[in-house]
Image (tube, rainbow, N blue to C red; front, side, top):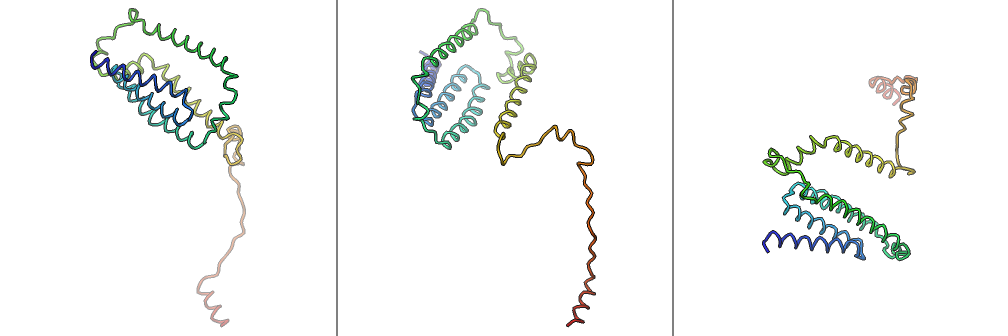
Length: 213
C-alpha cells in the first residue's frame, strides 16, 4: 500500500467515525466537536483528490464560521438533552423509514455520478489551468444562470430569517413599505410657527444690574 492509499483510508476512517459520533453522542457539544472533526477529515480527503478549492472552502466556511456559531448557540442555550430524548423510541420507526429512503436516494444519485465510462473528458485548455481557476471558469460561463439563481435563493433565505426573527417583538423597529409608498408631500414636511424670543444685549443687561445694585 502506497502513501496516498494509506492517507486516504486513514482520513476516511476518521470521517466515518466522526460522523457516527455526531449522531450517537449524548452531549450536543461533543456532537458539534465531532462534526468539526468530520469536516476537517473530509477536507483532507479533498486535498488528496486535488480539490483544493473545496477543501479550503470547507475549512474556512464550515469549520471556521458555521461550527463556531453552532458551538456558541449550543453552549449559550444550555439545552436539556433529557427532555429532547422523550418519545425517541416512539418516533423511531418513522425516522428509520425516512432514513432508509434518504440513503437509497443518495445511493442512486452517487452510483450514477460515479459512472466513469460515461464521464466526459476534461477539455485540453481547462486541464492546463489550476483547479480553482478551472472551477471559476466553469461556474461563471457554463453555469452562470444557476449560480445567480442560487444567490437569489440565499438572499431570500437571509431576508426570511431576519423577518422571522423580528416578528412579534415589542422592541423591534420595522418599516412598512406600503405606508412609505402612500405618503404625500404634506406628510413629509410640517411647518410649525414658533414665537420669536428677543434677548437683551449683554451691555444693557449689565447696566440694568448695576443700577439696581
